Length: 83
Image (cartoon, rainbow, N blue to C red; front, side):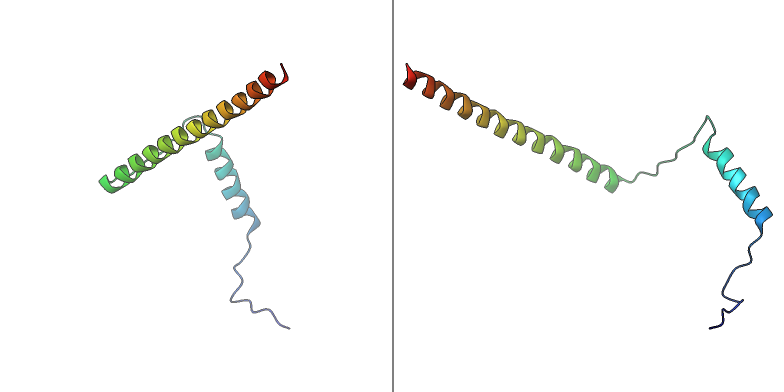
C-alpha cells in the first residue's frame, strides 16, 4: 500500500510552532473583541425563545406547587385520621 505524497500536506515544524505560539498569545489576551451581527428576524426569534422559556418556567412552577399542595393535603388527612 503506497501513500500518495500529493494528498498529504507538507509538515513544517517551525511554521506550526509559530502558529501555535501566536494562537496561544491571542487566546491569553486580556482584551477580547466579540462582534455580533443581528437581524430583525434574529431578534424576533430570540424574543420568542425567551418568552417560551418564561412560560415553561411558570408552568413547571405551577405544577410543582400543585404537587406539593396535594402532598401536604394527604399528610394532613393521614394526621387527622390518626387522631
